[in-house]
Image (cartoon, rainbow, N blue to C red; front, side, top):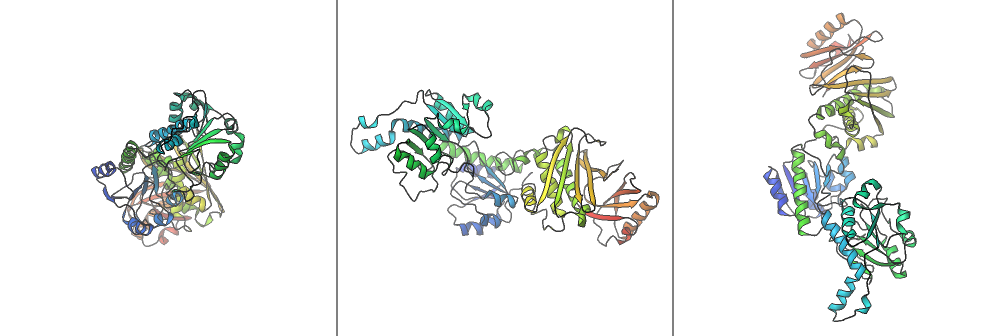
Length: 537
Protein backbone atom coordinates (compact mmCIF):
# COMPACT_ATOMS: atom_id res chain seq x y z
CA UNK A 1 0.00 0.00 0.00
CA UNK A 2 1.63 3.24 -1.20
CA UNK A 3 -0.04 6.50 -0.18
CA UNK A 4 0.08 9.83 -1.94
CA UNK A 5 0.49 12.49 0.75
CA UNK A 6 0.51 15.98 -0.66
CA UNK A 7 -0.57 17.99 2.37
CA UNK A 8 -0.24 17.18 6.09
CA UNK A 9 -1.69 19.02 9.08
CA UNK A 10 0.18 19.09 12.39
CA UNK A 11 -2.29 20.09 15.10
CA UNK A 12 -0.12 19.79 18.24
CA UNK A 13 3.23 21.22 19.25
CA UNK A 14 6.00 19.01 17.91
CA UNK A 15 9.73 19.20 17.35
CA UNK A 16 10.59 21.18 14.18
CA UNK A 17 12.48 18.15 12.82
CA UNK A 18 9.12 16.62 11.91
CA UNK A 19 8.25 19.50 9.59
CA UNK A 20 11.75 19.58 8.14
CA UNK A 21 11.74 15.88 7.19
CA UNK A 22 8.29 16.06 5.59
CA UNK A 23 9.09 19.19 3.59
CA UNK A 24 12.43 17.79 2.42
CA UNK A 25 10.46 14.92 0.90
CA UNK A 26 8.07 17.11 -1.03
CA UNK A 27 5.16 17.10 1.42
CA UNK A 28 3.42 20.37 2.18
CA UNK A 29 3.05 20.92 5.93
CA UNK A 30 0.66 23.21 7.78
CA UNK A 31 0.98 23.57 11.55
CA UNK A 32 -2.10 24.83 13.40
CA UNK A 33 -2.31 24.12 17.12
CA UNK A 34 -4.99 24.65 19.76
CA UNK A 35 -7.81 24.11 17.25
CA UNK A 36 -11.27 23.60 18.70
CA UNK A 37 -13.19 20.52 17.60
CA UNK A 38 -15.29 22.65 15.27
CA UNK A 39 -12.21 24.32 13.78
CA UNK A 40 -10.52 20.95 13.21
CA UNK A 41 -13.65 19.57 11.53
CA UNK A 42 -13.70 22.59 9.24
CA UNK A 43 -9.97 22.37 8.52
CA UNK A 44 -9.41 18.63 8.01
CA UNK A 45 -11.10 18.02 4.60
CA UNK A 46 -8.19 19.47 2.60
CA UNK A 47 -5.48 17.28 4.16
CA UNK A 48 -4.13 13.84 3.24
CA UNK A 49 -2.40 13.31 6.58
CA UNK A 50 -2.71 14.41 10.21
CA UNK A 51 -0.03 14.35 12.92
CA UNK A 52 -0.95 14.79 16.58
CA UNK A 53 0.48 14.28 20.02
CA UNK A 54 -1.92 13.93 22.94
CA UNK A 55 -3.77 17.26 22.98
CA UNK A 56 -5.79 16.86 19.78
CA UNK A 57 -8.83 14.57 20.10
CA UNK A 58 -9.34 12.87 16.75
CA UNK A 59 -12.96 11.85 17.20
CA UNK A 60 -15.30 10.07 14.81
CA UNK A 61 -16.80 13.45 13.86
CA UNK A 62 -13.37 14.71 12.82
CA UNK A 63 -12.58 11.53 10.90
CA UNK A 64 -15.94 11.50 9.10
CA UNK A 65 -15.35 15.10 8.00
CA UNK A 66 -11.97 14.19 6.48
CA UNK A 67 -12.68 13.81 2.79
CA UNK A 68 -9.09 13.05 1.73
CA UNK A 69 -7.44 11.78 4.91
CA UNK A 70 -5.35 8.65 4.39
CA UNK A 71 -3.21 8.48 7.52
CA UNK A 72 -3.19 9.72 11.13
CA UNK A 73 0.12 9.75 12.97
CA UNK A 74 0.56 9.94 16.74
CA UNK A 75 3.98 11.20 17.81
CA UNK A 76 4.06 8.90 20.82
CA UNK A 77 2.89 5.46 21.85
CA UNK A 78 -0.71 5.65 23.01
CA UNK A 79 -3.56 6.35 20.61
CA UNK A 80 -6.27 6.90 23.22
CA UNK A 81 -7.03 10.29 21.67
CA UNK A 82 -7.77 8.76 18.25
CA UNK A 83 -10.97 6.91 17.40
CA UNK A 84 -9.22 3.96 15.75
CA UNK A 85 -12.46 2.14 14.92
CA UNK A 86 -13.79 5.16 13.01
CA UNK A 87 -10.45 5.54 11.25
CA UNK A 88 -10.42 1.89 10.23
CA UNK A 89 -14.02 2.08 8.97
CA UNK A 90 -12.97 4.98 6.76
CA UNK A 91 -9.90 3.14 5.49
CA UNK A 92 -7.48 5.48 7.27
CA UNK A 93 -4.20 4.12 8.61
CA UNK A 94 -3.41 5.00 12.23
CA UNK A 95 0.28 5.06 13.16
CA UNK A 96 2.19 5.59 16.36
CA UNK A 97 5.89 5.65 17.25
CA UNK A 98 6.19 2.57 19.46
CA UNK A 99 9.85 2.97 20.36
CA UNK A 100 10.31 6.73 20.46
CA UNK A 101 9.67 7.32 24.15
CA UNK A 102 10.71 3.91 25.48
CA UNK A 103 13.82 5.06 27.32
CA UNK A 104 12.20 8.17 28.76
CA UNK A 105 9.19 6.23 30.06
CA UNK A 106 11.43 3.49 31.48
CA UNK A 107 13.67 6.01 33.25
CA UNK A 108 10.66 7.82 34.71
CA UNK A 109 9.31 4.52 36.03
CA UNK A 110 12.64 3.71 37.65
CA UNK A 111 12.77 7.20 39.16
CA UNK A 112 9.39 6.67 40.81
CA UNK A 113 10.42 3.25 42.16
CA UNK A 114 13.56 4.73 43.73
CA UNK A 115 11.63 7.72 45.06
CA UNK A 116 9.03 5.47 46.70
CA UNK A 117 11.69 3.36 48.39
CA UNK A 118 13.19 6.43 50.11
CA UNK A 119 10.11 8.69 50.47
CA UNK A 120 11.91 11.34 48.47
CA UNK A 121 8.76 13.34 47.71
CA UNK A 122 7.82 13.89 51.36
CA UNK A 123 11.43 14.40 52.41
CA UNK A 124 11.92 17.12 49.78
CA UNK A 125 8.69 18.88 50.82
CA UNK A 126 9.78 18.75 54.47
CA UNK A 127 13.10 20.35 53.67
CA UNK A 128 11.45 23.10 51.65
CA UNK A 129 9.28 23.78 54.68
CA UNK A 130 12.43 24.39 56.72
CA UNK A 131 12.32 21.07 58.63
CA UNK A 132 15.00 18.48 59.36
CA UNK A 133 13.03 15.27 60.07
CA UNK A 134 15.59 12.53 59.43
CA UNK A 135 13.86 9.93 61.59
CA UNK A 136 10.47 10.45 59.96
CA UNK A 137 11.68 9.37 56.53
CA UNK A 138 13.18 5.97 57.14
CA UNK A 139 13.35 4.16 53.78
CA UNK A 140 13.97 0.71 52.35
CA UNK A 141 16.69 -0.70 50.16
CA UNK A 142 15.76 -2.02 46.73
CA UNK A 143 18.43 -4.69 46.94
CA UNK A 144 16.86 -8.12 47.26
CA UNK A 145 13.32 -6.88 46.66
CA UNK A 146 11.03 -8.32 43.97
CA UNK A 147 9.75 -6.09 41.19
CA UNK A 148 6.73 -7.36 39.26
CA UNK A 149 6.42 -5.99 35.72
CA UNK A 150 3.01 -6.30 34.09
CA UNK A 151 3.67 -5.91 30.38
CA UNK A 152 7.04 -7.14 29.13
CA UNK A 153 7.31 -5.12 25.93
CA UNK A 154 9.88 -2.46 25.13
CA UNK A 155 9.37 -0.34 28.24
CA UNK A 156 8.89 -3.26 30.61
CA UNK A 157 12.13 -4.82 29.38
CA UNK A 158 14.11 -1.60 29.86
CA UNK A 159 12.71 -1.17 33.38
CA UNK A 160 13.74 -4.72 34.23
CA UNK A 161 17.30 -4.25 33.00
CA UNK A 162 17.74 -1.01 34.94
CA UNK A 163 16.24 -2.19 38.21
CA UNK A 164 18.29 -5.37 38.15
CA UNK A 165 21.33 -3.14 38.56
CA UNK A 166 19.92 -2.25 42.01
CA UNK A 167 19.90 -5.94 42.88
CA UNK A 168 16.15 -6.37 42.43
CA UNK A 169 14.65 -9.68 41.30
CA UNK A 170 12.35 -9.09 38.33
CA UNK A 171 9.28 -11.19 37.59
CA UNK A 172 6.59 -10.42 35.08
CA UNK A 173 3.56 -11.29 33.02
CA UNK A 174 2.58 -10.62 29.42
CA UNK A 175 -0.15 -12.42 27.45
CA UNK A 176 1.88 -12.20 24.23
CA UNK A 177 5.54 -12.21 25.27
CA UNK A 178 6.35 -15.58 26.79
CA UNK A 179 8.88 -16.86 29.27
CA UNK A 180 11.42 -17.78 26.59
CA UNK A 181 11.64 -14.09 25.64
CA UNK A 182 11.54 -12.65 29.18
CA UNK A 183 14.32 -15.03 30.19
CA UNK A 184 16.63 -13.23 27.76
CA UNK A 185 16.48 -10.18 30.05
CA UNK A 186 16.57 -12.20 33.27
CA UNK A 187 12.88 -11.84 34.12
CA UNK A 188 10.87 -14.83 35.28
CA UNK A 189 7.48 -15.20 33.58
CA UNK A 190 4.69 -16.00 36.05
CA UNK A 191 0.91 -15.97 36.04
CA UNK A 192 -0.81 -12.99 37.63
CA UNK A 193 -1.97 -15.06 40.59
CA UNK A 194 1.63 -16.12 41.22
CA UNK A 195 2.92 -12.56 40.85
CA UNK A 196 0.68 -10.80 43.38
CA UNK A 197 1.87 -12.78 46.38
CA UNK A 198 5.57 -12.35 45.55
CA UNK A 199 5.80 -8.70 44.55
CA UNK A 200 7.28 -5.97 46.74
CA UNK A 201 6.83 -3.45 43.91
CA UNK A 202 4.46 -3.63 40.92
CA UNK A 203 4.79 -1.55 37.76
CA UNK A 204 2.35 -1.70 34.84
CA UNK A 205 3.27 -1.25 31.17
CA UNK A 206 0.20 -2.27 29.19
CA UNK A 207 -2.28 -0.43 26.96
CA UNK A 208 -5.63 0.53 28.47
CA UNK A 209 -8.06 -1.96 26.94
CA UNK A 210 -11.12 -3.67 28.44
CA UNK A 211 -8.92 -6.54 29.65
CA UNK A 212 -6.55 -4.22 31.53
CA UNK A 213 -9.01 -1.67 32.93
CA UNK A 214 -8.81 -1.85 36.75
CA UNK A 215 -6.36 -4.73 36.38
CA UNK A 216 -5.07 -3.85 39.84
CA UNK A 217 -8.10 -3.63 42.09
CA UNK A 218 -9.32 -4.45 45.60
CA UNK A 219 -8.95 -8.19 45.05
CA UNK A 220 -5.39 -7.80 43.78
CA UNK A 221 -4.33 -5.58 46.70
CA UNK A 222 -5.81 -8.15 49.08
CA UNK A 223 -3.74 -10.88 47.41
CA UNK A 224 -0.51 -8.88 47.63
CA UNK A 225 2.00 -8.65 50.45
CA UNK A 226 1.15 -6.05 53.05
CA UNK A 227 3.09 -2.92 52.20
CA UNK A 228 3.31 -3.47 48.44
CA UNK A 229 4.16 -0.40 46.36
CA UNK A 230 2.74 0.27 42.87
CA UNK A 231 3.79 2.44 39.92
CA UNK A 232 1.78 3.46 36.86
CA UNK A 233 3.50 5.31 34.02
CA UNK A 234 1.38 3.61 31.34
CA UNK A 235 -2.30 4.64 31.23
CA UNK A 236 -4.71 5.92 33.82
CA UNK A 237 -7.34 3.35 34.73
CA UNK A 238 -5.11 0.28 34.75
CA UNK A 239 -4.95 0.73 38.52
CA UNK A 240 -8.37 1.25 40.10
CA UNK A 241 -7.80 4.62 41.78
CA UNK A 242 -10.56 4.14 44.37
CA UNK A 243 -9.16 0.72 45.30
CA UNK A 244 -5.65 2.19 45.52
CA UNK A 245 -6.83 4.91 47.90
CA UNK A 246 -8.47 2.29 50.13
CA UNK A 247 -5.29 0.19 50.12
CA UNK A 248 -3.16 3.21 51.02
CA UNK A 249 -5.43 4.16 53.91
CA UNK A 250 -5.51 0.61 55.26
CA UNK A 251 -1.76 0.18 55.02
CA UNK A 252 -2.03 -2.71 52.55
CA UNK A 253 -0.24 -0.47 50.04
CA UNK A 254 2.73 1.52 51.36
CA UNK A 255 3.18 3.84 48.41
CA UNK A 256 2.21 4.68 44.85
CA UNK A 257 4.03 6.45 42.03
CA UNK A 258 1.53 7.81 39.54
CA UNK A 259 2.28 9.60 36.30
CA UNK A 260 -1.08 8.92 34.63
CA UNK A 261 -4.67 9.21 35.81
CA UNK A 262 -8.15 8.12 34.79
CA UNK A 263 -9.02 11.77 34.24
CA UNK A 264 -6.32 14.14 33.07
CA UNK A 265 -5.99 16.61 34.59
CA UNK A 266 -7.76 15.19 37.65
CA UNK A 267 -10.78 17.05 38.99
CA UNK A 268 -10.45 15.24 42.33
CA UNK A 269 -6.97 15.50 43.84
CA UNK A 270 -7.66 13.36 46.91
CA UNK A 271 -5.45 10.51 45.71
CA UNK A 272 -2.73 12.84 44.44
CA UNK A 273 -2.51 14.62 47.80
CA UNK A 274 -2.22 11.40 49.82
CA UNK A 275 1.11 11.48 51.72
CA UNK A 276 2.16 8.10 50.35
CA UNK A 277 1.64 9.09 46.70
CA UNK A 278 4.27 10.61 44.46
CA UNK A 279 2.44 12.11 41.49
CA UNK A 280 3.68 13.70 38.29
CA UNK A 281 1.60 15.24 35.47
CA UNK A 282 2.05 12.61 32.72
CA UNK A 283 5.76 13.21 32.23
CA UNK A 284 6.79 9.74 31.06
CA UNK A 285 7.64 10.90 27.54
CA UNK A 286 8.43 14.49 28.46
CA UNK A 287 12.12 14.66 27.72
CA UNK A 288 13.84 16.69 25.06
CA UNK A 289 15.33 13.53 23.60
CA UNK A 290 12.04 11.60 23.46
CA UNK A 291 10.12 14.43 21.82
CA UNK A 292 12.81 14.93 19.22
CA UNK A 293 12.90 11.19 18.58
CA UNK A 294 9.14 10.71 18.13
CA UNK A 295 8.94 13.77 15.87
CA UNK A 296 11.62 12.36 13.60
CA UNK A 297 10.13 8.86 13.68
CA UNK A 298 6.56 9.83 12.78
CA UNK A 299 7.78 12.04 9.93
CA UNK A 300 10.02 9.28 8.57
CA UNK A 301 7.18 6.75 8.85
CA UNK A 302 4.99 9.05 6.75
CA UNK A 303 7.75 9.36 4.16
CA UNK A 304 8.31 5.59 4.11
CA UNK A 305 4.62 5.01 3.33
CA UNK A 306 4.68 7.47 0.44
CA UNK A 307 7.75 5.73 -0.99
CA UNK A 308 6.39 2.23 -0.46
CA UNK A 309 9.18 1.19 1.90
CA UNK A 310 7.46 0.40 5.17
CA UNK A 311 4.26 0.47 7.24
CA UNK A 312 6.12 0.45 10.54
CA UNK A 313 3.99 1.70 13.44
CA UNK A 314 0.65 1.09 11.72
CA UNK A 315 -1.61 -0.21 14.47
CA UNK A 316 -4.67 -0.94 12.32
CA UNK A 317 -2.90 -2.09 9.15
CA UNK A 318 0.24 -3.86 10.33
CA UNK A 319 -0.71 -7.01 8.42
CA UNK A 320 -0.52 -5.04 5.17
CA UNK A 321 3.19 -4.33 5.54
CA UNK A 322 4.01 -7.28 3.26
CA UNK A 323 1.91 -5.80 0.47
CA UNK A 324 4.59 -3.15 -0.10
CA UNK A 325 6.84 -5.82 -1.61
CA UNK A 326 6.87 -5.68 -5.43
CA UNK A 327 6.63 -9.48 -5.47
CA UNK A 328 3.45 -9.47 -3.36
CA UNK A 329 1.57 -6.62 -5.07
CA UNK A 330 0.48 -8.75 -8.08
CA UNK A 331 -0.93 -11.35 -5.67
CA UNK A 332 -2.92 -8.65 -3.90
CA UNK A 333 -4.27 -7.54 -7.27
CA UNK A 334 -5.11 -11.15 -8.12
CA UNK A 335 -6.98 -11.62 -4.84
CA UNK A 336 -8.96 -8.40 -5.36
CA UNK A 337 -9.86 -9.47 -8.89
CA UNK A 338 -10.97 -12.94 -7.82
CA UNK A 339 -13.12 -11.28 -5.16
CA UNK A 340 -14.72 -9.05 -7.77
CA UNK A 341 -15.34 -11.97 -10.13
CA UNK A 342 -16.91 -13.91 -7.28
CA UNK A 343 -19.37 -11.09 -6.59
CA UNK A 344 -20.28 -10.72 -10.26
CA UNK A 345 -20.66 -14.43 -11.01
CA UNK A 346 -22.52 -15.16 -7.77
CA UNK A 347 -24.91 -12.32 -8.60
CA UNK A 348 -28.45 -12.84 -7.43
CA UNK A 349 -27.62 -16.41 -6.53
CA UNK A 350 -25.57 -15.40 -3.45
CA UNK A 351 -26.89 -16.49 -0.09
CA UNK A 352 -27.92 -14.06 2.62
CA UNK A 353 -25.22 -15.80 4.67
CA UNK A 354 -22.25 -15.06 2.45
CA UNK A 355 -19.27 -17.28 3.20
CA UNK A 356 -16.07 -17.06 1.22
CA UNK A 357 -13.35 -19.70 1.44
CA UNK A 358 -9.86 -18.66 0.32
CA UNK A 359 -7.17 -21.27 -0.18
CA UNK A 360 -3.58 -20.48 -1.14
CA UNK A 361 -0.60 -22.58 -2.11
CA UNK A 362 3.08 -21.87 -2.68
CA UNK A 363 5.83 -20.54 -0.45
CA UNK A 364 5.30 -16.92 -1.50
CA UNK A 365 1.77 -16.97 -0.02
CA UNK A 366 2.56 -18.94 3.13
CA UNK A 367 2.17 -15.82 5.32
CA UNK A 368 -0.50 -14.19 3.19
CA UNK A 369 -3.60 -14.91 5.25
CA UNK A 370 -4.25 -11.34 6.38
CA UNK A 371 -3.68 -9.50 3.10
CA UNK A 372 -5.31 -12.15 0.92
CA UNK A 373 -8.52 -12.03 2.96
CA UNK A 374 -8.53 -8.20 2.96
CA UNK A 375 -7.93 -8.09 -0.80
CA UNK A 376 -10.61 -10.66 -1.69
CA UNK A 377 -13.12 -8.89 0.55
CA UNK A 378 -12.28 -5.48 -0.95
CA UNK A 379 -12.79 -6.80 -4.47
CA UNK A 380 -15.94 -8.68 -3.52
CA UNK A 381 -17.68 -5.77 -1.78
CA UNK A 382 -16.85 -3.30 -4.55
CA UNK A 383 -18.86 -5.41 -7.01
CA UNK A 384 -21.72 -6.49 -4.73
CA UNK A 385 -24.88 -4.91 -6.12
CA UNK A 386 -26.43 -4.56 -2.67
CA UNK A 387 -23.40 -2.80 -1.13
CA UNK A 388 -22.69 0.84 -1.89
CA UNK A 389 -18.90 0.63 -1.75
CA UNK A 390 -16.53 2.02 -4.36
CA UNK A 391 -12.78 1.96 -4.84
CA UNK A 392 -12.56 5.35 -3.13
CA UNK A 393 -14.45 4.24 -0.01
CA UNK A 394 -13.09 0.70 0.31
CA UNK A 395 -9.51 -0.46 0.72
CA UNK A 396 -7.39 -3.11 2.44
CA UNK A 397 -7.58 -1.24 5.76
CA UNK A 398 -11.35 -1.14 6.18
CA UNK A 399 -12.44 -4.16 4.12
CA UNK A 400 -12.25 -6.71 7.00
CA UNK A 401 -14.23 -4.47 9.39
CA UNK A 402 -16.86 -3.51 6.81
CA UNK A 403 -17.21 -7.15 5.75
CA UNK A 404 -17.84 -8.13 9.35
CA UNK A 405 -20.53 -5.45 9.63
CA UNK A 406 -22.07 -6.70 6.36
CA UNK A 407 -22.05 -10.26 7.79
CA UNK A 408 -19.68 -11.53 5.12
CA UNK A 409 -17.64 -14.42 6.49
CA UNK A 410 -14.21 -15.34 5.21
CA UNK A 411 -11.86 -18.19 5.99
CA UNK A 412 -8.28 -18.53 4.74
CA UNK A 413 -6.19 -21.69 4.65
CA UNK A 414 -2.81 -22.50 3.14
CA UNK A 415 -2.03 -25.87 1.61
CA UNK A 416 1.09 -27.39 0.14
CA UNK A 417 -0.75 -28.72 -2.91
CA UNK A 418 -4.00 -27.68 -4.58
CA UNK A 419 -3.73 -30.17 -7.44
CA UNK A 420 -3.64 -27.42 -10.03
CA UNK A 421 -1.15 -26.87 -12.82
CA UNK A 422 0.59 -23.94 -11.06
CA UNK A 423 2.74 -24.15 -7.94
CA UNK A 424 1.56 -20.81 -6.51
CA UNK A 425 -2.17 -20.11 -6.65
CA UNK A 426 -5.15 -18.50 -4.95
CA UNK A 427 -8.52 -20.25 -4.92
CA UNK A 428 -11.80 -18.58 -3.97
CA UNK A 429 -14.87 -20.70 -3.27
CA UNK A 430 -18.33 -19.49 -2.38
CA UNK A 431 -21.60 -21.33 -1.84
CA UNK A 432 -24.62 -19.74 -3.48
CA UNK A 433 -28.28 -20.67 -3.73
CA UNK A 434 -27.52 -21.96 -7.22
CA UNK A 435 -24.57 -24.11 -6.13
CA UNK A 436 -20.91 -23.62 -5.48
CA UNK A 437 -18.68 -21.12 -7.27
CA UNK A 438 -15.01 -21.99 -7.74
CA UNK A 439 -12.27 -19.68 -9.10
CA UNK A 440 -8.53 -20.24 -9.22
CA UNK A 441 -5.87 -17.77 -10.29
CA UNK A 442 -2.12 -17.29 -10.30
CA UNK A 443 0.48 -14.70 -11.25
CA UNK A 444 2.57 -15.00 -14.41
CA UNK A 445 5.32 -12.48 -14.96
CA UNK A 446 3.81 -10.21 -12.28
CA UNK A 447 0.45 -10.29 -14.12
CA UNK A 448 -2.62 -11.93 -12.50
CA UNK A 449 -4.29 -14.59 -14.66
CA UNK A 450 -7.29 -16.91 -14.34
CA UNK A 451 -6.57 -20.64 -14.23
CA UNK A 452 -9.93 -22.24 -13.44
CA UNK A 453 -13.64 -21.44 -13.41
CA UNK A 454 -15.72 -24.12 -11.74
CA UNK A 455 -14.20 -27.42 -12.92
CA UNK A 456 -12.87 -26.13 -16.23
CA UNK A 457 -9.25 -25.09 -16.86
CA UNK A 458 -7.73 -22.57 -19.26
CA UNK A 459 -4.79 -23.94 -21.23
CA UNK A 460 -3.89 -20.31 -21.99
CA UNK A 461 -4.89 -18.44 -18.82
CA UNK A 462 -6.56 -15.07 -19.56
CA UNK A 463 -5.09 -11.90 -18.09
CA UNK A 464 -7.20 -10.40 -15.32
CA UNK A 465 -6.96 -6.70 -16.01
CA UNK A 466 -8.91 -3.97 -17.73
CA UNK A 467 -12.51 -4.48 -18.86
CA UNK A 468 -13.38 -8.07 -19.66
CA UNK A 469 -16.31 -10.35 -20.39
CA UNK A 470 -16.66 -13.75 -18.83
CA UNK A 471 -19.20 -16.08 -20.41
CA UNK A 472 -20.44 -19.64 -20.19
CA UNK A 473 -21.40 -21.44 -23.38
CA UNK A 474 -22.32 -24.88 -24.68
CA UNK A 475 -19.50 -27.03 -25.92
CA UNK A 476 -19.52 -26.02 -29.54
CA UNK A 477 -16.46 -23.78 -29.61
CA UNK A 478 -16.15 -23.66 -33.38
CA UNK A 479 -19.59 -22.04 -33.56
CA UNK A 480 -19.66 -20.07 -30.29
CA UNK A 481 -16.39 -18.15 -30.66
CA UNK A 482 -17.20 -16.57 -34.06
CA UNK A 483 -20.71 -15.72 -32.85
CA UNK A 484 -19.41 -14.06 -29.66
CA UNK A 485 -16.81 -12.11 -31.62
CA UNK A 486 -19.42 -11.01 -34.14
CA UNK A 487 -21.81 -9.99 -31.37
CA UNK A 488 -19.14 -7.92 -29.66
CA UNK A 489 -18.20 -6.29 -32.96
CA UNK A 490 -21.85 -5.44 -33.48
CA UNK A 491 -21.87 -3.83 -30.01
CA UNK A 492 -18.85 -1.72 -30.98
CA UNK A 493 -16.36 -3.57 -28.78
CA UNK A 494 -12.69 -4.09 -29.64
CA UNK A 495 -11.21 -7.39 -28.50
CA UNK A 496 -7.56 -7.80 -27.51
CA UNK A 497 -7.71 -11.51 -26.61
CA UNK A 498 -10.12 -14.38 -26.07
CA UNK A 499 -9.49 -17.52 -24.01
CA UNK A 500 -11.63 -20.66 -23.90
CA UNK A 501 -11.52 -23.27 -21.14
CA UNK A 502 -11.69 -27.03 -21.31
CA UNK A 503 -15.09 -28.72 -21.47
CA UNK A 504 -17.02 -29.93 -18.42
CA UNK A 505 -20.64 -31.10 -18.42
CA UNK A 506 -21.00 -30.08 -22.07
CA UNK A 507 -20.11 -26.45 -21.38
CA UNK A 508 -17.09 -24.17 -21.58
CA UNK A 509 -16.10 -20.82 -20.08
CA UNK A 510 -14.63 -17.96 -22.02
CA UNK A 511 -12.89 -14.72 -21.08
CA UNK A 512 -12.65 -11.80 -23.49
CA UNK A 513 -10.26 -8.90 -22.84
CA UNK A 514 -11.50 -5.58 -24.24
CA UNK A 515 -9.94 -2.20 -24.92
CA UNK A 516 -12.95 -0.49 -23.32
CA UNK A 517 -16.24 -1.51 -21.72
CA UNK A 518 -19.17 -2.40 -23.96
CA UNK A 519 -21.51 0.56 -23.74
CA UNK A 520 -24.40 -0.58 -25.98
CA UNK A 521 -25.46 -3.67 -24.06
CA UNK A 522 -24.66 -7.32 -24.58
CA UNK A 523 -27.87 -8.49 -26.21
CA UNK A 524 -26.00 -9.51 -29.36
CA UNK A 525 -23.78 -11.79 -27.26
CA UNK A 526 -26.34 -13.12 -24.78
CA UNK A 527 -28.34 -14.94 -27.46
CA UNK A 528 -25.33 -17.16 -28.22
CA UNK A 529 -24.27 -18.12 -24.68
CA UNK A 530 -25.70 -19.51 -21.45
CA UNK A 531 -24.59 -16.48 -19.41
CA UNK A 532 -22.34 -13.45 -19.82
CA UNK A 533 -21.07 -10.80 -17.42
CA UNK A 534 -19.00 -7.70 -18.00
CA UNK A 535 -16.56 -6.53 -15.34
CA UNK A 536 -14.26 -3.51 -15.22
CA UNK A 537 -11.17 -4.14 -13.10
